[in-house]
Length: 100
Image (cartoon, rainbow, N blue to C red):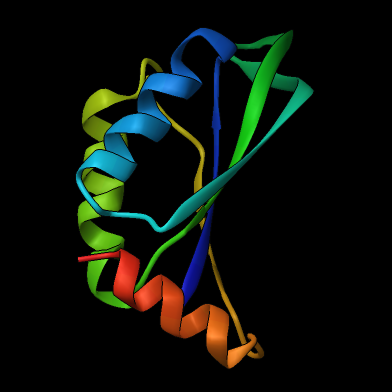
């Protein structure tokens, strides 16, 4: 089962998380404020962002990506999938039950 790493601007992160939870595409999302420095359109930018670690399932992953792409304010949102090789069985079971 995957954990999905997503970054979003602070003013959009909470709405995105609520949508993912309401649509049952994730079981849980951890949120961490961060400062991102990146190159875009030939210039270096420094922006406040929120890191979202979204716990989902293999079956819901494609729908999660589609939802983020549709509702994220960036033209090119950061969406990275981390597949777990070891996870507590009770946690995996809870996540499976929470995501439809």
